[in-house]
Image (tube, rainbow, N blue to C red; front, side):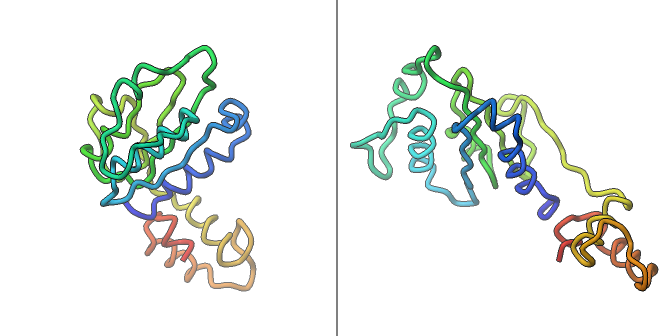
Length: 171
């Protein structure tokens, strides 16, 4: 569902000290969107992952498979975290998955992809009532708990109406 915090969580993972320590400067975030130019996006991703500029490959040109799959020096390559955000279909995702040792790919999507494409899925759940109350209070009052002087009944009605959706609570 939109607004549950998928992209926000993915961005926070990029900021995590342990993640940054492990992947160093090899964390790459790409927004895929509904109608991407897959070959151009594939080229940009490969250039970031490999550090090689693919001169001579313009828009619409297919990248050579041998270059993407077999010319990867695992001894000198540092681990890579590739985040593909806002992926709308398997047909877009499959060409963007690089099977390279040390390359971890986090896919952010509203869609559940089959195990043949994605080997581990984490479903984000809506917030529990106490979490929703804390988030609303944080954004509305600048505190993580209910402040004095406000109608607790009204605040609870707002929390109930938002049904645990973080974006709705923030707005």
